[in-house]
Image 1 (tube, rainbow, N blue to C red):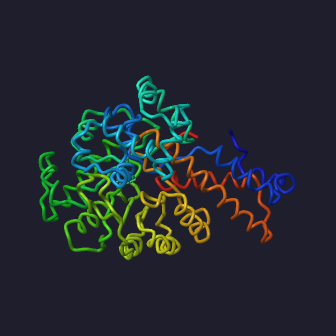
Image 2: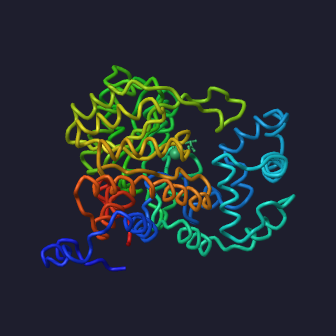
Length: 436
Ligand code: FIX
Ligand code: ZN
């Protein structure tokens, strides 16, 4: 759908007459634009077929998603230890029985499974998973990926790639074809959050590093980042940080961030994504489901954006209480891009609250959502929910502007939706990361 560039329409003077929408026409124009615009998903944990079993898909992976495991442990008397002793298939059976047969799936995560089954024309109230398993077993992954992206209205997903994860590192070291639908990201949690452990891994890879992050070590970490930049061609670097994150800090992590990561991001013209506010493993018995949230001191963001104006920061904060501060900081620093309603915030009621506030304070200069999908088919319901939540918010915003005296056109709405779902992400990653 090739759009006539808005400038051409405006200079042609044509826009004045034809396109001004009445207040009643705004809602359908918004819905049309959201339906017509394929999104760029700026943060996921998805992988292309070349990464083999690291990429998760299918009914057993969908049901054993840690969001559902957390809910399962609330509804079931089974101990986590007993649950982990089961096979993946047995775990999925237990979760299906408990959350979808013995209970109505009304939570956001469980409704998601229903939406996926419905999208593939599968029963949503079966007593067992035999039909679903047969369906997914019949899928060839490349065709299935194309179908899921089409159903979700997504052209590109941005991955989360850990250069120190043994399985993933092997795939990159063996050389992997670039897949335009899956864009890489250099994820640095082990280096920026847990340096005391992985530094030996870098020594094994031939880097002269140490636990203290000495000057030599910092140079070597720069070399490590350059090597991985060339190997991976990431669209940004990223790290998830606890609620206790502080900057500046005279710690190995503080020094690595200031002396190695930020300079590398400048050298390669990459934004740094900071995802802040996790209380890691408050209940390790339930593994990935065992992380929680804490309110962070966002002055670290203030210091980073002010003191490193040449760096761009893609920021998502996990605590609901931090959202307003992040919006205010984005009004202070043009090198700060708020993105997504992350993890425990990815619930329609909270997404609505955060997105309204962002539009009121930032207009369309933010990235409203990412899926954080860990299993391929999750893209379908997470993007359906996003479009469903965005529609009334945008409609009301344009209606208010109309009421205040500014007529709006269909093309202008299309331009805004394109920004929110695509071009803000492209502009910020500095990469034309995807075909339209
Ligand atoms: O750090 C992250 O990228 C988080 O999104 C994940 O660690 C988290 O487990 C998740 O899946 C959230 O949706
Ligand atoms: Zn994530």
